[in-house]
Image (cartoon, rainbow over all chains, first blue to last red; front, side, top):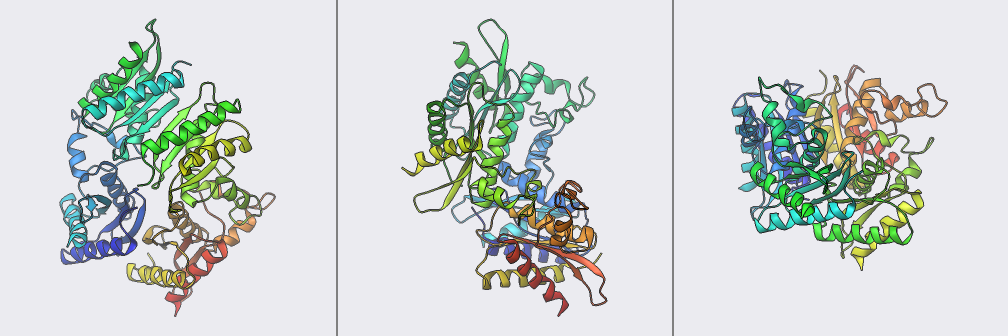
Length: 134
Length: 134
Length: 134
Length: 134
């Protein structure tokens, strides 16, 4: 079923450290290969509305095995996936969600981060992913 | 109420074979004339988020008796059906959903396919439709 | 991620044959280890309302790794899990959902059947499970 | 807004250790004074359906500032709060959710645990609460 709790907590911790380094307050969620929640942390003072967004970003990234921002480029007006966000009970398609792969390149889960600009969200999520690949 | 299970499974099988031929991993759904699910298959490794999208495409195609992509052209900003995706608990209006007709040209159901580009989704859905018209 | 489509379709087929043998019209759903839908079939004339119930039974059986009826005994008034049905977007806790195990005894998915008495639903689901263990 | 992430993670950790000591696999959630999620952990192999239940137990405990089991006694047929579970998008009213107080006795959040019998769920939740009061 993908990432273990130990791995998920390692990713959350790495994301948290990156957020602290950048002086950001983030919500961080990790789901497993079945897109079910494994670990979550909301840093003190982080946006309340980002609890749900972080979890949805993680789920969206695993639902389609790509960074959420990639999906968002195709879901714009006129894009091939316009309004895909209405599926699956609500997707989030801007950056901040990234699949997590194991050593063999298989996707074993995903991380979702929300609480700042989407660039920062992506950077912090990426720190979580990298903690598991090193 | 339209397509029988035997017909629905024939359409799913044909769509699956087309997907294999194109080396794609698809979610395939068939609904009947009442827009209720009759048959569904998720090919190994197909996107998890496409389970819901394939079903919604099939339902959307029967809800409005047209290919989902046609509806999507009118649901764009400024279009006559702008954001129609908010209705019916969530529609999907990009290609991949196609109505199924019987020999008399009556619509008896619809197929929805999701898992690749919308062009591929439509191609695979079309293979399912054709299997019932031949 | 548990059952393959080939296995899921084998389970659906076995359940369908058992239903035909008993002269029943069933909805049959199979989910994988992540509780995501893999295969579904509604037999001609089966209850429309059972589409959703069959899928929820399969999901509930995997959510708690036990037959749905076991959960239902504890969710009665005065029971230890009273009204657990309100979680997870709606559970179904009467018989008809059964976990599917692999040769090593690991749970790799679940089947849910709905369309007749709960005893018949369970019997037909069990035929699906047995098809994979033999 | 009540518990900090540091406190919430301390409670989760203590609950996890208690679960390991009892050889249980639990889902553990902590919410703050606003009933919004702060920290969550699903132990390897814990029920998937308990992700949602653990979070709902924590929220329910803070919504009404009492252990979830207390509420469940009044929500039975004939009870004064019959079917209160229908409110708030779905409550869970069996044991496993407990409010968290600060040194002054003010409620600053709640913990919810799900994955075993309700007695075990409550015991593990209580270990989380005690970790913050000592």
